[in-house]
Amino acid sequence: MIPQKNTRLTRTLLAIDDFLFATRISTSTVALQTRVTVLALYGITLASLVAGPYSILKDYDAGYTALAITTSVYLVILLGGVVLFWITRSLTLARISVTIAFLTLLTGITASQGGPRGLAFIYIISGYAALYNLLGFKVGLAVPSLVLLCFGIVLAADAYGPLSVFRDSELRVIYTMIMLVSTVLGTFSVLYQHLIIKKLYTAAYTDELTGLPGRNRLEQLIETQIRVSRVGAHAFSLIGVKISEFSRINSFHGSMYADMLIRELARRLNAEASPRHKVTRYTGTVFVVVVRSSDTQDVAELGRRLLDAAQAPYDIDGEHSFIQTSVTITRFPQDGREAQTLIANLMASFSRAGSSPGSLSFFDGRLFQVERRRHSVLEALHKAVENSEFELYLQPRLRLSDRSCDGAELLLRWRNPVVGEVAPDIFIPLAEDAGLIGEITRWVLNSAGALITTLQAQLGADGRGFIYSINLSPLDLSGLEFMAAVHSMIERTKLPTSSIEFEITEGIMMDENPITHQNLDTLRNSGHRIAIDDFGIGYSSLSYLHRVRAHNLKIDRSFVQRINETHKVFPVVDAIISMAKSLQLDITAEGVETPYQEQYLRERGCDLGQGWLYARPMTSYDFIRWCKQHSAANMSVG
Ligand code: C2E
Ligand code: CA
Ligand code: CA
Image 1 (cartoon, rainbow, N blue to C red):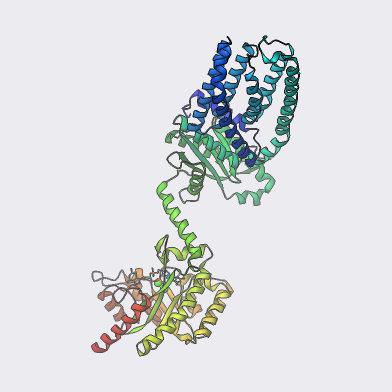
Image 2: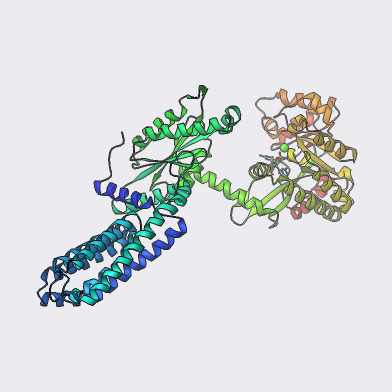
């Protein structure tokens, strides 16, 4: 059981807010009503402060002590209401104060039989309008009408003293008429609001299927909790219950069954959470329970019960089924100080690996940072091409036999002013998931064409016969636009196709998409070279290797890096080299970092190498300098 931490007052206030809310109309009406209410509150207070003291003094002088006292009390309560409103921003509290203030005043007027100047009468008429606006809801129907009715009866009975303005018979008729008309109008307008517009409200704030409060109402409920917590440090939590793979239920049992299941789930959640906790339906498959506690153990316990209830087998119309759900929790104030933040964090917590089916987790701020970073990187990535944030770096590739340069691999770099520099290992998979890789590859091809042309011009004899490698994502080859981009690059630059090598990963070889293989054939037939990148870590298979008919096989860095002086034998590297030799492929070792690795590879017959031993990836400017220095040094050694 979750211990009752809220005071009686808090609960009463919450109940009143719930009750008043139940007839509010639409968000825009509420906003308007709120503005009117605040204005009325300030207006009445100001008017009362100006007229009140004068009236109190006069009434007191004339011997109407009760009226003088009640008017003073009225003023104090009204001011108290304004202060309370400033502190809490709670209109409910303001409304309650104003109502009490008016009732006090009315008691005074009635007790004093109308008072000498009937100044109070002005309060009543203006007060009626104000009350209507301030309450404007269910109570709006009852209180002002009742008050006016009572007042009308007193007037009709001619019960006021000789000094009262209400003694004037002509005035009395006018007052009675005004009161009659305003009672009828007030009753009619409130009834209208109640009967007709409530339907609209219900549609906007209630989930039709389950009858539970919906998304908009959840936000309001949380805001109320936040306001209450300001008055007396009450913490609360949100427990989210999410169904995964609900489409399975829809497709196997039909949507009618799925609806019934959701209704049953709502019933179970409601039964498990006591009435103090509000169960709401946030989206089709996410329920959120507002729990009036933030004690880790208590909330986790309730979360666990909700999870068990949701996961218990369902037997609907004789059909058995089960659903997978996960539960996650955000707490106020540590996980967010606003309704939107708390909900957003709850949802973020769901989309994390931690919230696998059947699990219960608390929102974790650190994981959230990772998630947020991912999100901002993804957002930035959408504009990266447009904002020209990419650059191509080059890493030289050397012949192991004489360390002469054979060309370079083009490696993409991305620097964004907001998220900083992001490694391709991070953003390439993100771009693939987000469907942005095609655009990025088109940029790479375009820029590579221009870059290689410039390099050839600048390097002259030093760069003759260089082969430049471009990395491809498996997704690139599966579409037709890719080939068009390659053709246009070649047409524009007139580069020999044999000077451009495309690096594909083993995964592509497994691809059964005919377009992928058609594209690979076209690339090869137009004279381009194909390299198998990261060889050895994926589904290395001889038959696939044969099918792709690549020119170059790149041994993955992880194998090369295992080569060291202590072990001496590296069967996997040996096997890859001998296999590639038998298929008459070039062999490139990636990530060569030590002279020993170079020597080992050279002795086994590996043709090419790239790695930090020779050079790190660098800008085209540095690459030109590096090439010139390197070829001069190599000449003098040779
Ligand atoms: P990759 O194709 O295997 O590229 C080689 C990676 O190894 C590069 O990382 C390079 O900087 C790094 N490297 C080179 N020599 C050494 C070494 O001696 N030691 C170590 N530890 N690392 C070395 P980078 O540039 O961060 O690229 C990472 C991956 O991102 C690439 O792996 C490639 O899969 C992908 N990538 C890079 N540019 C592109 C591109 O233009 N298009 C596509 N689709 N993918 C790209
Ligand atoms: Ca590569
Ligand atoms: Ca590689």
